[in-house]
Length: 77
Image (tube, rainbow, N blue to C red):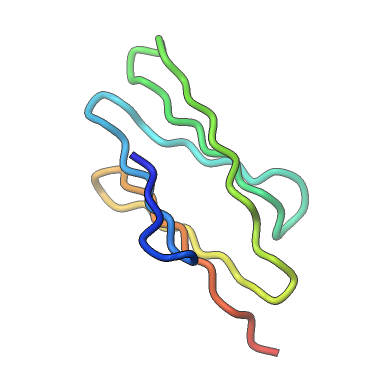
């Protein structure tokens, strides 16, 4: 399940038997690609997550159950 908690907080919760793998695309601050892959390798879902804007930061955290939390915040000048 992918859901927006707020416009600045996105959560990816994989179903049982699936794992989320994250890749940064391009340079630092670039977009992120999330692959939700079945543990047996029979199914893969690709998600493109927009990187932070010029005045934003992005934090990505994964908990022990594999739930990924992506948070955007305003960058301090």
